[in-house]
Image 1 (cartoon, rainbow, N blue to C red):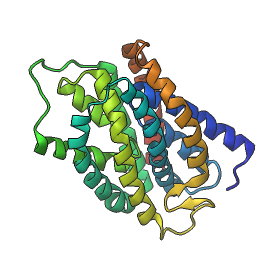
Image 2 (cartoon, rainbow, N blue to C red):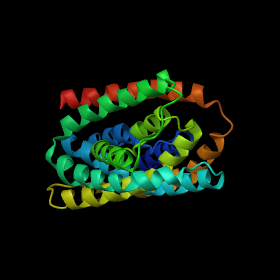
Image 3 (cartoon, one colour):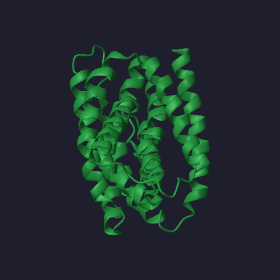
Length: 271
């Protein structure tokens, strides 16, 4: 699969938007990238089952770069709760490896599409409703945060997202301020992405009929273009997060996610 000029433009536009949204809302970008990369690869002759898996893996790989750029911007504003991130990270790494090395490789792409579509819908509903937690609820202890990290890492490995679709609602449910939850979620994107990428490379290394430029399940040409663009725009999103009306933006983004989730459900059922 050649990286034609039109394909470069498509991937650059995708990276620009997802990077900005990663900084703005604390998402790793996977919920946007996976449907679009799946569409791009399927339209260029990659088998649907493989296209979904490579889209998920490639999306996750870009989060390594997006999260570094985004978290630095949030850290400079003192918004990252590093005390929470340190306790979630070990569970995240273990859960990510279990998901990307084991379950991901065994599941068919159609099942992953359906699973991805359902979780996009769940995430969109959380964002749209924006439910307020009980004022007395607090974060669990170390063991509870380790377990929560395991769930976040495992689910992220299956859908190629940075974990914000679980970690941000979880932290806000425990009365962590939304801006701190978004910033901390961005920091968690790095260990989630790094652990999962190792799993995708190992589990995809023996898969036949991979397209040109594949490294395990990761499609390197798309990774390069998207990561370069998203790395530049993530700090802009993080800066905008401190000035724009986040509530209205979250509801608008939730509507976009519903549409993307419906597309992935369609691909899964049709596959």
